[in-house]
Each structure stands twice: as C-alpha cells, then as structure tokens.
Image 1 (tube, rainbow, N blue to C red):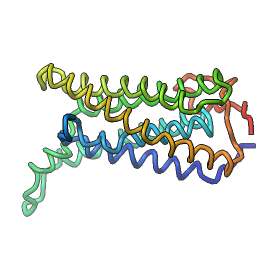
Image 2 (tube, one colour; image 1 turned 90 degrees about the vertical axis):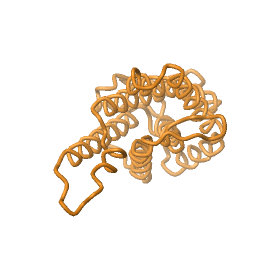
Image 3 (cartoon, rainbow, N blue to C red; image 1 turned 60 degrees about the vertical axis):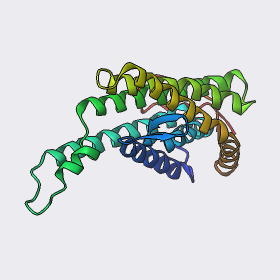
Length: 231
C-alpha cells in the first residue's frame, strides 16, 4: 500500500508555482548592485530549496515525479504562450507587440529553459540523495549546499548558453552566468536555516526520513519509488 502524506501535495504545488513564475519573470534582465541577471533568478532558488526538501524527506523517487510534473507544466505553459501569441489579435486589442515582447517565447528559449531545468534539478536531487547515504543523514547543510553548487551551475550555464549564444556578446553571457550562479547559490546558503526547519518539521509531521539505498536513479523511471526508508 502506498503511504499517504499530509504535506507532499502542498510542497509539490509550491515547487511548480515557483518554477512557472520564475520562467515568466526571466524575460526581464535586471541590475542589482554589481549583479546582472534575469528576473526569474530572484525566485528560482526557492525551487531548489523545495527540491532539497522533497528529496531529503520523501526521497529521490517522489522528487523525480515532482520534477517531471514541473517539466510538463512548464512545457504546457510555454506552448500555450506561443500558440496564443501566434493567433490573430482582436481588432480592438492593441497590445500584440507588448505581448510578444514579454510572453512571445521562441522555441530556442523554451528548449533552453526545459533542458536546463531538467539537468539542473535531477543533478541536485541525485547528489543530495547520494550524499545523505554517504553522511548517514548527518550534516544536512553539506548536501544541500553541495547539491546546489552543482545543480545551479548546470542549470545556469545550460540555459544562458543555449538561449543567448550568438545573441548577446560573449562578455555579457559570462557576466550573466557568474551573476546568476553567485546570486542563486547565495540565496540558498542564506536560507539554510529555513531548509533545516522545513525538513525537521516535515520529517516529524510525515513520520518519514527517506534513504535512497535501493533506489533506481534513472530519471525516466517515474513510476519507481524505493521502499527503503528510515522513520
């Protein structure tokens, strides 16, 4: 019998919501002090925090399902934006150009976003799950930060290089990569106490502290959930 959880649905909704909002707000490039990054960077690190919590408490198998749900939701959103943008506007609606500038996603941007998300989130979840076994559940901060450092560099570099190579000067590409990476990792490191509180509270509420000892880590085996758990 599949175990029922009280808060897994809530964490899933928050994860997907943060992902979708970040994708929309990433259409604006902003300057904050010495950092230059896309607007989605402000909120996107929270998706990695939720990803850490999902894997730490519920395990890689359940986290994998949530990552795929986010992927499908982002794909559906992007395709809808492009289809609506391609439809002829009503005669009295004069905002077609504004819509295209903000929501007129190109296939290249969509591909960059989905590839980067897929690779980054699964790298983050995989590393955290493996480190939990290696550390025997101790030193949570070592695996949340280590997984973030890897996942974020994969995500950030893939998105910017796929989306903007040949469009922006190389100097700006590297500025965006470095600024995004430092900001995202910095946010998650600062939120480490929140991550500790969330995981501790959820483990107590759910009576679940999953160890992926016998888990199949293939990201495409979305129906596979390991039963290896310490409660």
